Every structure is written in C-alpha cells, then in structure tokens.
Length: 81
Image 1 (tube, rainbow, N blue to C red):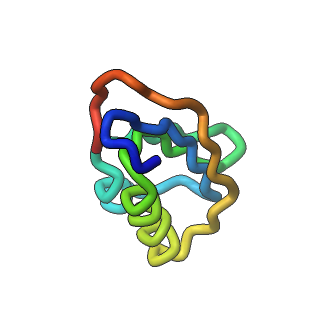
Image 2 (image 1 turned 135 degrees about the vertical axis):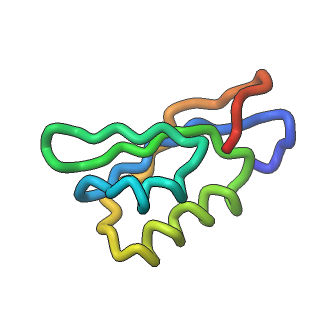
Image 3 (image 1 turned 90 degrees about the vertical axis):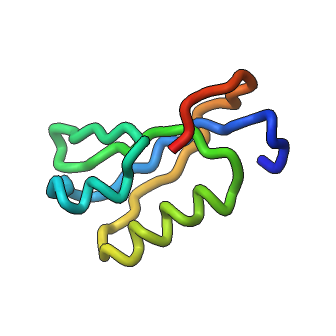
C-alpha cells in the first residue's frame, strides 16, 4: 500500500447504523446501511495510515468493528476521501 500510484479499495463493516452527525466523519466514503443492522463503509485508501485513521475514528466512536476487507487494487486515479 505504499506505492503513491496505487490505491486499495476497502470494505469496513460495523455494527449498527450511524446518525447523520456521526456519518460526516466518513466524508468521501460510501456508507451503506444494511437490512441486518450493520453499516458497510467503502472507499479507496492511498496508504495504511489513512486506513488506520478511519479505524481509529470508528474505535473512538465506540462502534463495534466487525470486519475490514481489501476488495481490490485501484491502479488508475480515483476519488479519494
């Protein structure tokens, strides 16, 4: 994940749905509220520090983290949060 020309697309699954106020910290990422009460947070991350920053915010909110999955490598320029 250290190559500046590559991004990795992640799906982060958390327990519960977020209020609009809490959702704002994920600006630039896609949030999908699932029928089972979970939320899927998806997006491109340029490096691990950027990913860990989001994971720390989730931890600080006290929201249970269920999973973090790498979905794919993005090699062309893409929207980053």
